[in-house]
Length: 252
Ligand SMILES: C[S@@+](CC[C@H](N)C(=O)[O-])C[C@H]1O[C@@H](n2cnc3c(N)ncnc32)[C@H](O)[C@@H]1O
Image 1 (cartoon, rainbow, N blue to C red):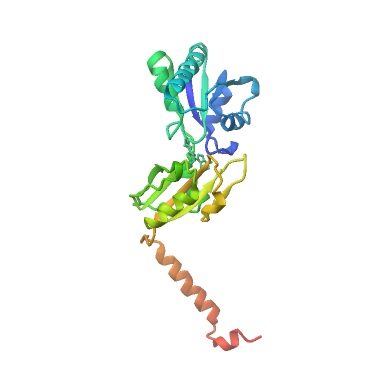
Image 2: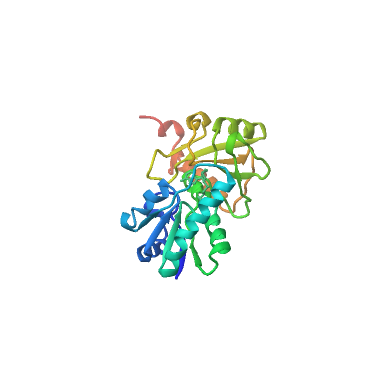
């Protein structure tokens, strides 16, 4: 039998994939690593099928390893006897706790089969939420910006784990980037904020990201000229199709 790593998407319960939903319907138990993923999971499966795991809030690697060993020891028998799922927000393979679980299972329970169902990651959901078009040919990097860090390099960057938005914004501004922030994008829990004002997201919220783009970045797209054509058509229309002079058009 199998342990499925299921990506829940950014947080709105209806942004899970059809396959992810089918897997959650079919498994015996659904494990979640945190409160928010649990809240999304309970929109799809009854509480009675949710398995809670305990992870300490610590950066002590030995304690974390111990917690992962315990989690794997709990999950492995379930995944041998039947099917089980472990859910994560976003995609299980993008900056996710699922990687730790998979490595722990590989090390201590290598007979457990693991399958992954991808989810919509904040790495791509940001584009729609912040109205950014990543056009063909563009490069885009994913970085971390915890503690006010302002990584630089590529022309476009998505920054996860923004904990000090004003400091990150100052660093990026100095380095020649425009920056926008997105908080709790496509999430039911909490308020969604999309803003260029770093002070508006100055308080710390784990679900905050930034998009940075090098100032003055030139783009050239085959369809750009349609906008110029549309402008010209609008200008013709407002000038009067019959060729009436401007003074008459504006005369009421
Ligand atoms: C540990 S990473 C997990 C990423 C997740 N696996 C994914 O694929 O989206 C957590 C970081 O992702 C970003 N993030 C995840 N979901 C988000 C959301 N709905 N809105 C804004 N940022 C989000 C935040 O920067 C947060 O600190």
